[in-house]
Length: 440
Image (cartoon, rainbow, N blue to C red; front, side):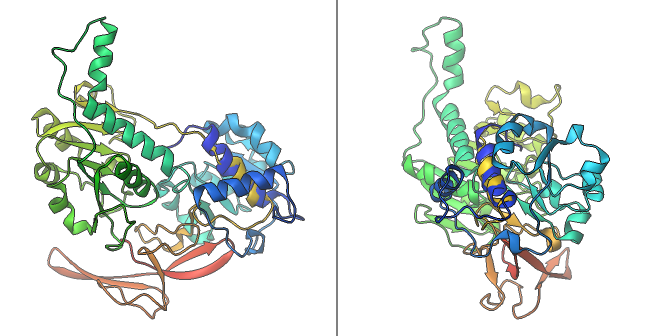
């Protein structure tokens, strides 16, 4: 799910470009500027941590001369050019082969063709939280490119979107809008309204977006429970954090289920007939994770049978959704093709990267070299509690062995024991650090 290019994109990219484009200077407390102040305010607002080692010390880094920008971010070119005056920002649709070959960075561009041509490429800013489209490219693994996304920065916006759908569904606002269009007073025949306060919401995927959903749901007086693959730890406002094998058990108690999970082998198709059958009758399902996590036919069956009271989808399978899909005609379903957000973080991110300064940890920097088809969830190279831990401190558990230059997992599938060995490296703003992946 991509974000529309306005304020959120602008500020995030500025934060990184500021770090990229001013080779002789760092935006720091000793050198106050409007750009530096903006970046500092953004870091403080989002609770980000600046890495002690600047990206200019990353092997192969140089002040970017050419930055390729996706067509969807074309409107951001003027503001990005202001924070990166020494770089040439080019819409990818207008870039020549020579310009692509010389590109140092891209914003929203990660195709196999561009990766093959852009031999000088060092950094990719992806305009969404999910990066599977990018990390699946073989050259990403081979060249150890720095990849950042919007997992943390878009968390608040997406969480508001989720709560908006929950309120629309539970308060039947769509019904009242239709009645208003007919100039009809609907007091007598209005559907029964439900309060969020006192209800239970299950957040599946307690990452950057899921955590913000949980925070806001708790503020509404809801009981929050969650699923995460890394362990039972979570913020204080989450009553219980379960593991993936507890999904069906926890779904039985939930009035709302919110899918914030990434798309992995394990999460593909997890919201299926068995899952919907386990949900409380009259519950609601909201999905802002990935469309392929939900079996569309099974969701349609649950909605048409009355098992579910309603659903809100920001992602579907397939995308774009065909006009003849039954989903379009379900009266108890909300479909939002793309959740817009204000891209005010892009310029700040672009600016910091351009200056070679320290990267903000939670502007999810990822090293895809050994994803091994698993989600790494490395947030800016920082170890996030319960997800990524250093080799030296990660105990051997759940089939994960410690003390090795990688990660070993043994498991049974279809009665056969399998072994996997993964090695993951994460760029911590230019510092190469080997870590284990505790989240599957």
